[in-house]
Image (cartoon, rainbow, N blue to C red; front, side, top):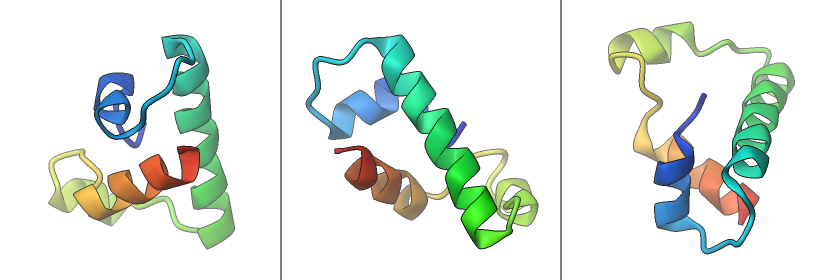
Length: 64
């Protein structure tokens, strides 16, 4: 997953429950991977299994 629900909540003020936010994060990740035709394997390898902050904040903006 791009980020945890707790990480998302630090950037997005919402009253949605955790499960709804987790579903949104997973759907967004699959959409981005499909749209870009990129699994981001190399990005995750370089960053110890974590997406870089610019990707996380971009996803938070989309969800917001």
